[in-house]
Image 1 (cartoon, helix red, strand yellow):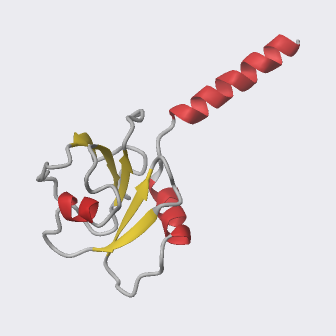
Image 2: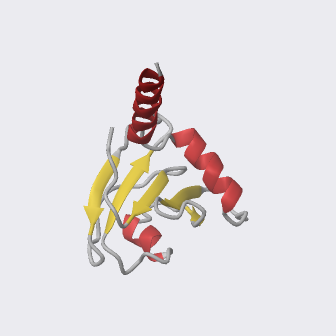
Length: 124
């Protein structure tokens, strides 16, 4: 019986770890831990390894992913980047490695959530 309970708990923990970030909870987390912005159009940025390192960056038409990355302490790092939008909630609209010198052409939209990681993380 104890083995069955242990196996059930282990399976539950593995399943929980396999689930990637979700859009609305990510926005809420970043808003709670970042400095309060004085602008209306926002991008939400978080670091996967240290989720208390969060940023709210002002969105403007044509802002590049490189601009956003350069606004963080990880600007000189090769990163894995995951971008979430409210329409897809848990399915990333962008999930790729971005080298420190790369300038990805991905079009950001207002209220995107951008998770940056120096380690790979699982995509659903």
